[in-house]
Length: 485
View 1 (cartoon, rainbow, N blue to C red):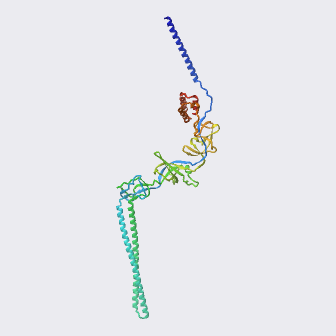
View 2 (tube, rainbow, N blue to C red):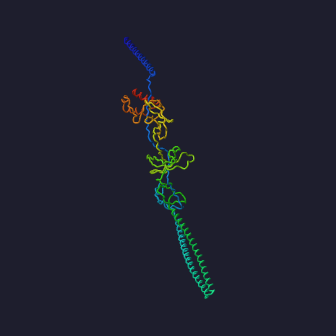
View 3 (tube, helix red, strand yellow):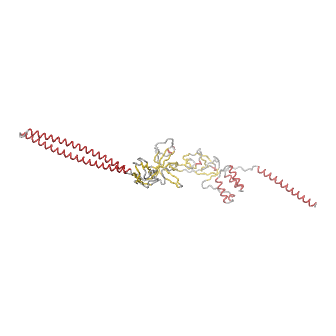
């Protein structure tokens, strides 16, 4: 028993000793690891190289496009008004909002009873005036005949007087006979005067009858016009809008019934700034008639129409700036007056200019040019136009050189970059990266290309996640370099 007890005590002491030694070893190992982790790792100093997209400068002839917004208007619009008052007794089926009508189509009728009665009365008065004129003309003819007969009587009386005077000279006549002949001649001449007065009265009556006839004709024409005004017709092919009339309703003279719009004769009104306006003028200060394209997106369908600048507003409105221009459109299928459209105006061509991304030029008008050993240099350019996300510049002495397409605060003069040209953006990956799973490799490459410059906090999280995924250290370092770290 004593031997067994001593053996158990010995085994217990041995186990305690081994446990203490193991604890001590773990403590020393933990202390060493903590010390090693606190010591900074020394890396060899190396220059940071950034990847940057570059474009090649190529001088060309460009037609700048001036973009603005405008409103479509109808060049030919007619207000349909009631010329007379009354009840609408008939209306065409086309008289409705958006109704299509053709030139000469009868649209509606206003009760013509009163107008027809006035026309019949005017025509009766005209017939009476015509009868009075005919009677006056006949009286004038009779007066002329009576004058002719009176002149014959006077001629005969003059012959009789001459015979009596001849007989008196030969001593066979008497003085009384001569006096009687003279009295008869005087009476004949007096008759001629009376007939002439009657003729003058007849002529006056004819003139009055003609005047009365003219008045009656005017009255008939006025009555016919008023009767015609009870029928409203379309003056040209078009579409009706703002229709307010209904069949059986009462309308008053001058009341607006509808508007007739010609949808094929449209123009667009748009406003440009004064500097933009000067680009559309020729040497004599007249508009050059630039080409215009109006477009509108309706439910995903892009409608486009072309035209030319035709005129400008006569004055600048109160509180407005720039110039209001009008462009006459050619064919405008699908467009309607009042549409708000995007307008693109073609400016005169610019020779030997360069189109660059807007992000390539800074506020000072400079760009970063790729120099020897892929280091950046600063060059000045002349900004001419802005075209959406691009700019048109005049870059003297830069033809054929590469320019950084997207400037960032990390890029500047003297910085070395890895140029990424269009069509050659994907670089040959590292052999260890090729050894990874293809899907994972593609995701890593796409992620790095899309996030070359990240905030420091986000960069640290990405690199930490890559290390947890046990990505090879060389690949992590390469990714960190590509991300600007």
